[in-house]
Figure 1 (cartoon, helix red, strand yellow):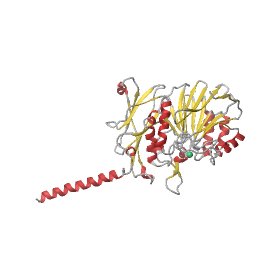
Figure 2 (cartoon, rainbow, N blue to C red):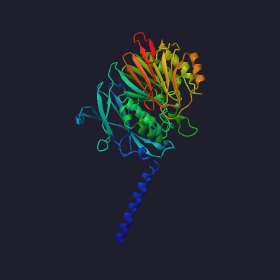
Figure 3 (cartoon, rainbow, N blue to C red):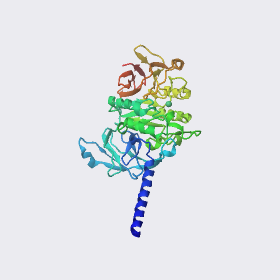
Figure 4 (cartoon, rainbow, N blue to C red):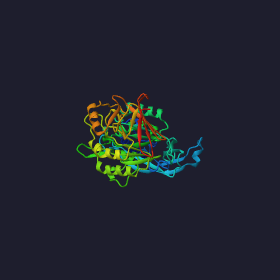
Length: 443
Ligand SMILES: [Fe+2]
């Protein structure tokens, strides 16, 4: 009888302990949507550039902390599933990340995993998957490596997604994918979300794009909303998720504070220089000068979040106009892609123009927005920029946009589409690669 009572007590104790541990585990998930909760299955899979786009890519994904060893497999794609027998397995770099570093998040630890695929062949379709190496794998996902020579290509650019991302940005990225499924890469020109460290917002950004993030190679640009204090009164800080969730090129010559927010991608003779317009601007002036001086690319494109010729009220980025624009002029930069102003403006320098287009073209400057937050244009401010050689060509208000940019032979074709997928604006640069002279056409 005594023995039986002891056994009953032991059983009750075990039940109590499991109940406590179970409720402690679940407690972290209370209030979270199911698509925010990490599990053994990979989520938030995102492809980024790492080294030479013709032979490498990086992939980053997330799981719960029970996945301690993670892997990625990659193979040249075949018309059937036989590629699996030739796949190469990479062990991932795994880091533990505590969402609770920011008080606005649940205190919850997750694992981020990343793999850099190297020694790929140019111009090939590859197929990869990520997982635990056993029973928790993603689907096989395809992407194409760049050619190692100049060739036609296409990419997508988004201004700020930022607010109500799942409700109101998802249709824009999905429309962009419908329009340009074969885009080689995608520039997210800052303010991907509103509150840098808020994991619920990153969850929305990843859910909005879904598999598109794992298929298009992303070039994320840091905006002011990815750079805010963790606690009131603290210094501004890069989103705590930024480095764990994006595996980006590291420019070793730059101060560590700028790593993975300032970098250059050379894609088939197109040089894309990504800047962090939040601070340490002087260091970046040197960087951009060197990158442009060294560039042998046929096209040079700059992207940073803050608008160099700002079309919205009270948002003038004087430093860029005074210190960066002269470099863009000197090195004949083709295109500058910005966000931040929640309105649309495409203009160019210098102001010389004809009704059919503009010869003697310098640089095209674009400010755009892909999310729902919209500001009015400040037409007086735009007019004042004409003293600095800027001419506005097309503008819009209250419209969500995405852009598809196609480069082919001596042409760069820029097209802005609205959220309905309708063409709103088009500009074509015709370039003489020998002289560097450019002409701006509307068709
Ligand atoms: Fe912004």
